Figure 1 (cartoon, helix red, strand yellow):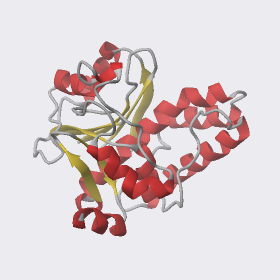
Figure 2: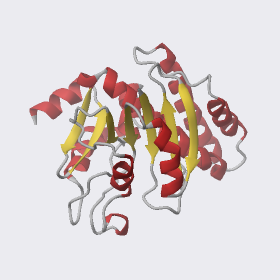
Figure 3: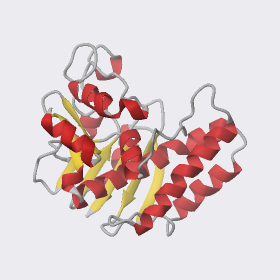
Figure 4: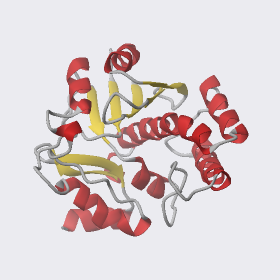
Length: 251
């Protein structure tokens, strides 16, 4: 079994982060590619057998305007953590002719129904709420490259995230990144970045690792995740606290 994370750019002008874990939680690789063909070539060997591919990008988009229902659900339950979603709809050029994520999943022959029993699946995920739940945080970590955040702030928040990920070695669903040369490259790049753009270059790979861990966590802890939404209108699979699970299930 392989657990893969794809921090997928909506179009082919930006880099996509890619990561893969084995069945025991060891990080096997973390990298970045740009074009569909490059991404598929990298994913194909890892998805030939049993796999769950967690994609941080919309798979199903059917609403002409506004938010998808799944985004509204995530916003309702995670907005207080500053972990709300970007709005996605068919009026946005990237989704007018279908989604990149679904095209990639179809090319690789992956089922995209979160309730499917197929041993080769892809699901949509979102790292921010997952990070809040997995590490019991009061709000999201501000590691993203955004205006108004200086280099040291971003480095400090990114380092916190890397520390949290390494601490998962002790979790019941372990993540074991430190045997991977790619992890040490990410650590070195974080420590020695001279500009915010240097940190931005490794964000995608880190988010991909988070996505891959979400996949592993979902398989190991099926009652501790929810696929908010549905296959018709779109869904987002995320870890949830017991309180959020109760609120979501009772809605």
